[in-house]
Length: 270
Image (cartoon, rainbow, N blue to C red; front, top):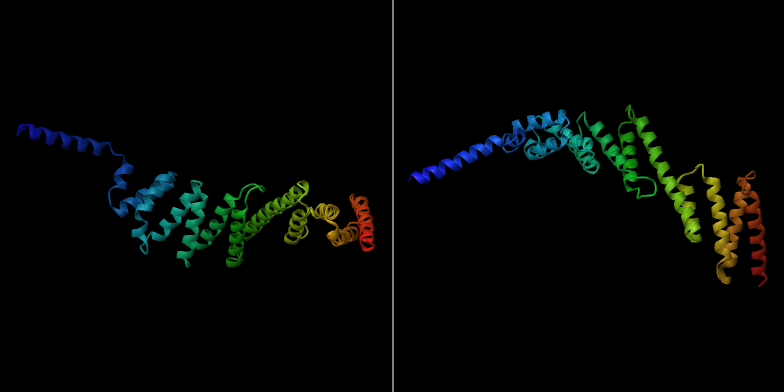
């Protein structure tokens, strides 16, 4: 009997010792007290310990919907992800906030931060630009939703920056196709770039590459399609000469035009 008491005392002592060694964070996290958890989460947020703040917010999110403090907590939850550089989750939770709290004064900021989180995910131009696409769409939605916002100018500047990245990506892709001797793909890619980005500073070089690509495509084609493809090259040459009469590439383009014209005549004469 005395041995049983000693064992019981030992386990009670161990439990009390373990409880005493628990951190304040663990004590709050396991307390089951929503108000206490919310207060601690807010304190961690304000002290920039976003990992602990997020962990505590996640415990009480299901119990806070529709209650006082729930809206502010949801915004801070999204913001904590952004401030900890978890931009994918930040974009998701800011969007969730803007969809859930449509009448909130915080909705404007949440809508902007949804786009800005995707902007932060936008990689260098050589990589996939799906995040850039999402950011552009998000900024355009913001401008349409809040045309008088002080953030409109910033949105437009960021849209221009992202579009420039996409423009460079398409132009470099066109040049890469040309260098790989995939002339048809080069023409399509460069034409699409010029359509998507009218007025680009690279327009002259892009049209010169189109001329060369169409000429080389025709030259390396089988006889039955050469006339058609040299005709396409001739049209591109004429368009280039008309637009860029002072171009550094003009002499080359004139040569391509004369050769294309000669090849068309030979094809027509059999």
